[in-house]
Image (cartoon, rainbow, N blue to C red):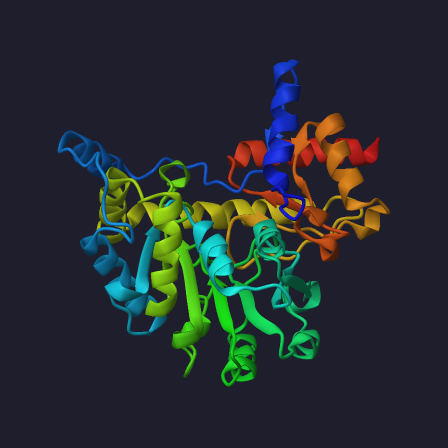
Length: 380
């Protein structure tokens, strides 16, 4: 248990809730959760499933019709050929980090992953007994990898590489040429790529490229995706992985030993989401773009802040080195003194020092209120 870490967003949320219990007003920009309702037709499908008796065990890897729909969707959007044998349906996206790492990694193995990055990557690498090898994301490259350091970090001990695009916490989208360069470096190696594509539908420019679409890479790539972010279904706990069949068999073994299966009625709602109207997704992404533009412009007017326009997800990751403050200290003061809950960049790894992460999954009114509170605090 000493090797397993926590997720900073929930820690800050707990502190913010405690302040609210004392009567303080807090603007919540810490949690990575869409503030939209699950689409109505998806909710109705879930309610119908309950009424129809979808309340019992289902197949461990998921119901075949949902797996077929996922395989078809991923085949179309990534330009690969996937079938039901490649798909594992799981309760949320995190099992597709946890289970493959438990299945594939041994002590002494090394895993390359982005830093700053989603903290569960490092947590699960350490928990599996493998060695984390963080590679910095560079602000001047749109928060893509330092490719020289990436290449230098590859060794005979490298057994897995974690990619995440669009990325949490930076909102960066890896350029196609960077994905191609990484694919070229890995093509002949005995290495598995865990490609976290959970934000694939939340992008503001070109559609992000999946490394699975490059020659010889589909047979060594695990795609992580799900319903939480795209369809505002965080509480439904529904995710999936698309992977080579031999890895899917291992994931199913771990599923049956831990969860038995993913909730049956939830899967019916997921089927409605992925096969039904997509208008709510387009509306949500358009609103995130509008908020992004306003909030980044406001951040760039704050003394000591500079912020790039993120190309995806619903986060902004301003550089705050100009304030002369450490990330954790400033994040704590913004919560305690200004009533704005955000995360220190170091909650996502050592290379996050000098940055803060804000979630724009809040109303434009609240985002503007947060900007005004920070302006007053920094001026005091």
